[in-house]
Image: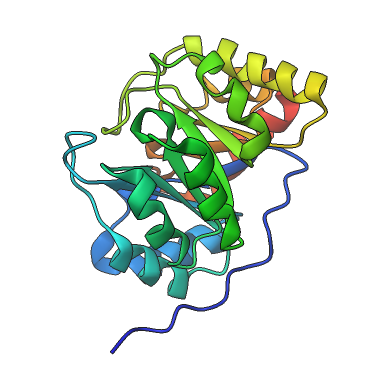
Length: 235
């Protein structure tokens, strides 16, 4: 029997930088409780890292977990795909109840088609770029996507040190968005902490993924509030 996926949440609206806790570090033995705690702490969206052990070395979870998170969560969910054959599998994750499906430009052979396929389901279609990928690689695709996620660490592992080169990429994307009159969201993922969040917010990041800066803190609400305050003040 197929489980019923609840309708998606209210579309994500970004008027100030939003912190997306990355569930990779949560207690999966108590997944629903963790989601409830994060929502009660003020999380406005959640981030899920899908890794297959091939596109990146680490292996995490797949569609079944995304569907479980969708049933438990009332806030928007971003699915960050770090898997092989993203052109083929993106549609599967778009149908899990996700609000954003983020695919890596490095893993696509038909980026325009894949983005269009994701968008056809009513899901926001975002592109991700790894640290060694220049903004110029996605510049021709900005009119075809709803957002760009800048990786500030190598994809695949948590707890890495933030790479400052991401700041210039965020700044460049912000310049392109303004000059082209577009409205795609700019995200950043990796090494976010109280020491780095102001710089990415100031550069123009809208969606800021945070892992250990939230999930490894004793008080989720305090951690989220501190990060949000630092991000807002930097604008």
